[in-house]
Image (cartoon, rainbow, N blue to C red; front, side):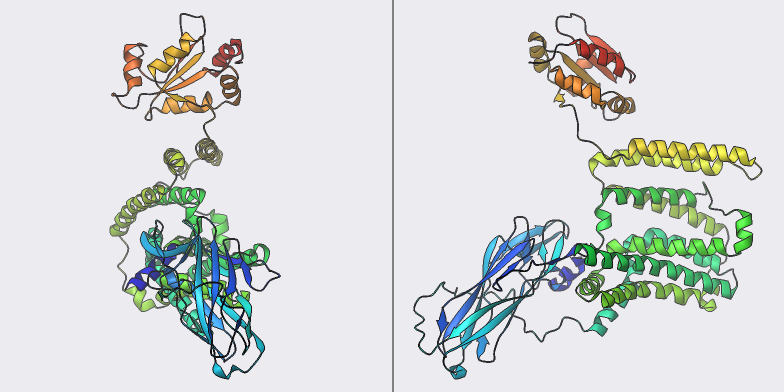
Length: 594
């Protein structure tokens, strides 16, 4: 049961192939994350004698290998595959004690190896091995090497060593002692054991594609798909089948893009795709949030997607086909980060295969996802059983708009704190622009007026996006937290003091931050003149800065910025956000710090 649970959560791992650098010595394997060496217990072994190989692992800091076959996600625990002549008989590998590691991504406690550790591979030389000879022994090594955010599956290959067999071997000086306790968490696996046959792997890929249709991540687009199928049921059989096939082509197009990216990454960069890794990119998550917001507005009827009649009359079915293609592509995009273990296993298998076979496996996943839609839309009997259109469809459509907003809120929680509020603010502005685009124009309105209104909507969205969605910069001014004693001490030393009274709920305060305190010239002057910059947070009424704003500085609210100049009894105060140039003039009057 634990093994199945481990496989199920394997989907959240990122895979990256990693090939080891060629080494002049066959007894050393080096990759970017781990180095493996081999050592023999005895210089030579006599027939009937027992010896062992010591595989010395050195994992880089922050990386680990899975120890237990029961808990390792996807069964990617460390495996040892020794091979040699028939008269070299291998025993069960002896693994070190593992330690517990809590994987935050999987939300699961795992047994792992990390740092420097040794795996021992005992072997016995058969009595019938003959006299003096030298034989080559190879050890294949498999397993995932993981950090807190990703897993790699290095192509370790085989590490080899030359075993000397001599009837006169004394076997007195052992290079190391083999531990008595045996751990079977990483068993020896014979070379003839194959994880998947090609046919089985392709079957798994197909089943994996089928499973994508029930993934939580695809739920946002399922209502749109259902509504599209309902609409298609009103069309002729030929058109219904054609639109269903185009929808399937949209799904396959996404997997074709994946296959192409896999080829480029392997050939050019020597790595592979990181499954679901796009959802770890804040920019991609923000884009998905905004897309869901726009889709919810579409559900609410704020705007509609139309094609000029001149184009529609020429293409006939172009609008429907284009929408079906895009919807299929979107369904595939949304489904990928939530794929279950069978998908991860099929995809991981594909990464280790030749490019042609890997491409076929990835496309088979897409076929598996597309098949249910192809069957549903090609069977008129099924479509005829769907409810007729009516008011229930409009209510259902609007209800789904709220579902999409809930999913958007869920996604936005994955954003870094520095970007979360910016995306929320921009979502509101984007919603306004979409409403402006769809509701401020009417069918009979002049074309020129439509163009002006929609140009303003687009310009406003672009301007807001540039303002809110820019990558957050590190704070340039080293603000000190409000401390009355610190301020008085600085004033007593004739040091200039700048106090910025602000609050988290104050939009004008955030505007002042962008328009004044983020200006490069202001930042440089504050640093050059040695100004004590104090951030006075008044978000809640119990904060010291809130009381000081009222009782000491007699100000009714924020934003307020106060500058104390050395030798001046009265402070300079600015209320609002348009004071950057005045602040600059005062700062330029100050002497530079020593």
